[in-house]
Length: 150
Image 1 (cartoon, one colour):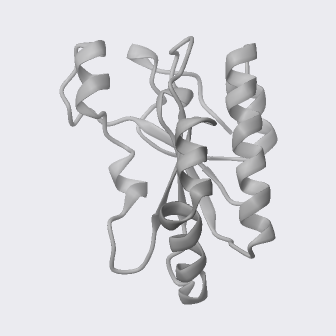
Image 2 (cartoon, helix red, strand yellow; image 1 turned 45 degrees about the horizontal axis):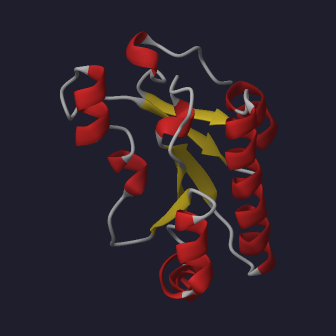
């Protein structure tokens, strides 16, 4: 279940488990947000077609009260899945699709894999730009969505 946004238009700190449908109902509330959401769904289809799996952590201005979010930030949590690493590298960093996703579709993908940067934790704090806009400390805790089935 997705809790109501807390102070400053952010999710309460922590991971909030939900389904794709719940996330869509909660955050795809305008034409702009629906377009971003549809872009994400197209990207997820490509990932499924490539055999990728793992839970998703969804973040970015999309999961805030920002009326026109810049993008959707997503991390595929593929820890414990060594066979997924090569597919992740191709989709997220090396393919022309990755650049298209970021620049045209406004979906930025990251991967959390064993022994590498843990985006699931990184996403739970405000970045410098958001902190400045909201008048908060850069390390202000905030919530993210975790989606297990996509």
